[in-house]
Length: 636
Image: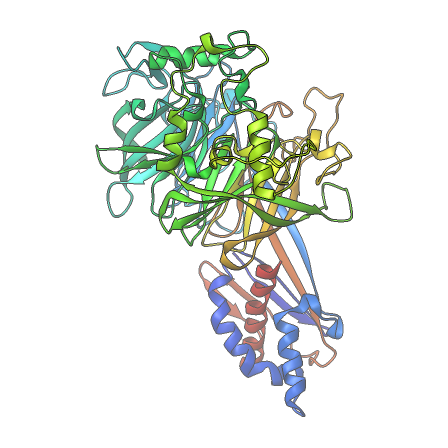
């Protein structure tokens, strides 16, 4: 990275990236305080000196001598995938290894693939990363997965024979281990190191099916070959949690346990035991897997893999974090606050606050209610956020409520009736919470417990006034080494987000938007703003979204330097892609008091820094300006 600062005719401009300026901050601010008087020649009063200091610390809020900032962005295409393949499983480990999968590619030519990019530390990128041409062809390499940077290594493909028996992606019945089918849908990857330097570990991969699966592959880095060796592989037995349902994206907890997400995609539980329901085949497959008819309230949660470095694995579904179509959970640095994205249509943004740091088994569930800006352009319109408390409980208490619905089958279904929690029960619970007659029947209902909040979380949140108009909410991502923002993907902005009513009403963007969320005290999100917009959308085109911009953003990963990796899941590009997005801040400080003859350049790169500026004091002043520039980034 090069940082360049120049002074000419009274103008000073600093252009830099977020990734490597952080180390300058502390020293820079100290130097700023010592040099500010000399730079501005404000020697006649203390108040003038303080004014100059404030100018540096927050140049956005000042008009002193024409100072200002500009923001530019770069979007670099770094991967392309085979036809029909969705980008999944994006995960960066502590050593900067980038694990990423190709889900359900063109079956006639490719297999679903789990793999990793070798040779690159993605947490320590240079200032410029090469771009992959959009004309790149899947035929360029046997597996069809192309990269502009590093080498993609295939670790496992669907159907491969595993060292511990069975096949990769194989889903096997609980009772007699009969193989029901082989999945082509590997999703989230979680690498759990087994040694101190992260050169050997277990790679856990979720398989997004009904019923779902999890594979465990032991891998070890081979420094001689520059690749990973596969030491062992197996599919895991999930019978202890009655199996899984559509394990989708995921995350790692701060205490290094994988958090997998059950993407429920079953909006109306009333239909669960209706044998004539359009999608009843999914429940039948789950019945074949279990050997008995499934309880719908066993599915739709965040599941933590405990003891992940041992052979004594534990699977813990966190009922207290709510039941809905989980895309993923992002645990914040306090180890209590968790943001939860809800994939589907007419969905809700949730937050969970655990009772105890590092323990997600009990706490309080919240839902977001947003107030839209006085505008409607989806590319620029943001939202203020307030959080509605839904309820508090624990896994153990909620488990007792779930068990009350065991044993219900299709034989119990009666058209027009409900074998599970009804909308009337949800309304009565909400009326009791709000002390308000919501359905205008002349009475205020109540409920004996809070099961509605945790077993029908989306409907419960809406009944209390949360905003339930989000459309295709995807990954939510944060990096504690770049702690300024939380990012949230919306793969298709439309439908209830653009219907002319409700809390959210913005223009459509069928190519998707990535939002950036600002954080207040205690890791509390208080603002949502668009930061990356897809498009242009052309409805008449074979592939409707511009090939040089994002479409259908899904997986998100925030790197240590603040850059964002974006994985696509769309049919609006011929090939799904991975993009590297980075924001650059340009600060311009204009001051007539600067000696025009004092000019020069400072370059700070991987191999050190050079200076051609006469005068050590001026060098220190410019260094201080760079430190102050970081504060501008953090404030924005």
